[in-house]
Length: 135
Image (cartoon, rainbow, N blue to C red; front, top):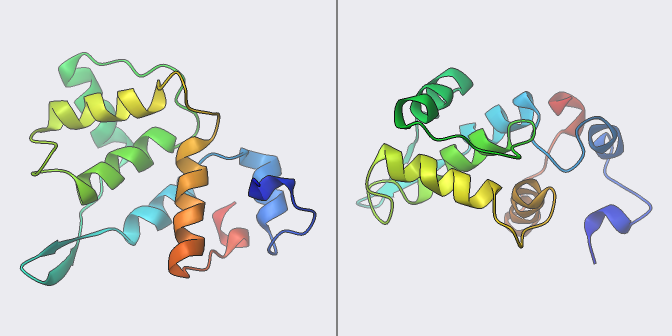
């Protein structure tokens, strides 16, 4: 059952969803990216996340247009990809931008899928969200 079908939300979540839907606000994306890290030889190192301008510059550099991106969903996916896959299965920045495009434009995905998955991960790993701070 989707979490948006329940009648009681954590404090501030309902207001967030009314404002942004199941999508990333700028503050939520920045907060999520601040939690991302790569583990290298047993050491956890926080990534230096892309900001909006840097990611837009990458899209322009490679001539890649991403249709259907809402809010900061594409930037979140870019930073998640940088954290989890870059330098391994995603070898270069052009492939990273193509990955983001594939996720956003996935024809069998549903509206809000990146944010829904992110929230499910927060629930699964016990990371609380201060929803009021994300609006």
